[in-house]
Image 1 (cartoon, rainbow, N blue to C red):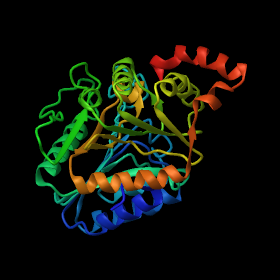
Image 2: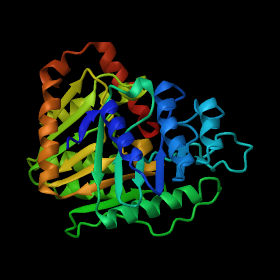
Image 3: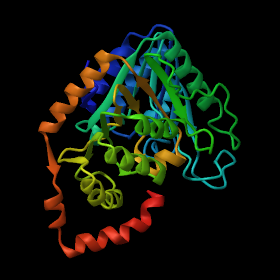
Length: 353
């Protein structure tokens, strides 16, 4: 099953999975819009709840700012669906977190405790043709870890203090599939630490696919070291995203990486996938390679060391490459003075993107 695909295809697969649910649906997402795409999705959840399936949904208050207090939200609640919002934005609300940055950026769908879907998908009409990442797993341990993580987030969604139990870091212990997540606490940034270690240990190939590229110093330093020791590195990012200033910041990294021999590809199509390969270890999840995700968001994902999964991903990358333009050092140096001046200015914003 392809890992990189349009969001419309991902949504169809998620809907198909939900339609099979018999006892329980656990669903969390960051971005959900108030439009026809979401309305059709809600209709299915409502029908399942009315049929007796227990449905629990957790959405982030910022990502769902257009969804809250809407007619389709009300329909969801009145059908018996359990809906929680993570991190209310109103500062006077007792359920708000101490920092506006702390977002629940996780996505997961767990059905009947038999299957888990993970990836970077968003729900809304504007996202349907984005290039997305999506992986399905039926390993009982992965499902249990993902379920425990969901309930931790759901339980603490409206509290001002966080106390997470059963934290699940990724350990390179030979497991084929490992679920992991991270919290914006100094010792709990498990995905960031794992990425850094995997880059540090890579000997052959690193592939990074991300919509927003603004890696913090620790990860960037390891990428540079990997390039120096001859690791083949490919980075795929969209030429234009839905965040203009993030695009400008991303460009500040390119010249140095090109000098190091890193292969950088621009896509005219919006890439929203979050998928990274480090030799034979693949990560698919919600982690953007920017400061906000690496430091301040709650993120999740799956590390896979399965040969078939890796081959499928590399085949997807080759297809993606056909639709991208490789950036060359010679071309990048020809950019005008204004672009180079903006690079210097935007470097000041790196810590905030």
